[in-house]
Length: 115
Length: 109
Image 1 (tube, each protein chain N blue to C red):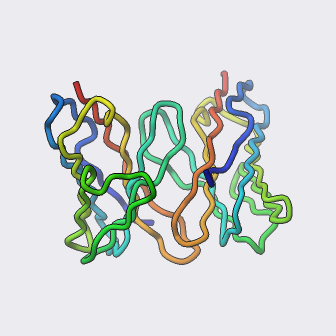
Image 2: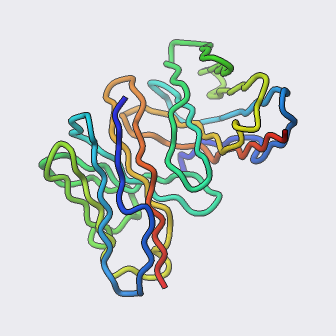
């Protein structure tokens, strides 16, 4: 299966800072990637679907101007949390679509803490 | 919300015992998947069962699917301390996954 690398694994920054999270597919050309958010001891909630070469598709209730997604190549999608505030603190996880009846492959997640 | 429900929310057992987790969902599906998550980590895919399948095995894992009841179960046999993790079901209709609420499994040595 695909190997997915997510970076950074942890970031702590001040309120108002913009934070970029990278998701790389190391051995698989990923036309579609997904970004999830997970609160402590909760399930994963899909934020958006990242499509290579086109605009991301955001789930209802997710602010696209707040969570900027760029998928400029078949191996890299980035999520930028703009002007982050403490309520944006969360665990963010990306995945690569397997296609058809295939599982997704997940990165190890990024723990974002906004002070 | 279309999110699935899992029960129990938490399960504590001794090594060697079996662990059963149940998942109910709300929509039609192409397949249902089970994932495992160690604390603070990403998800690891365990098993995928297609909508036209009723049971699937992989090592110590057994998954059943009842599409008429919109439910699935994951059985881990002869559990080990290393099985301690959170387990999530996820339904797939349009290549987007809808995750269940998860079961936190604790296996005591």
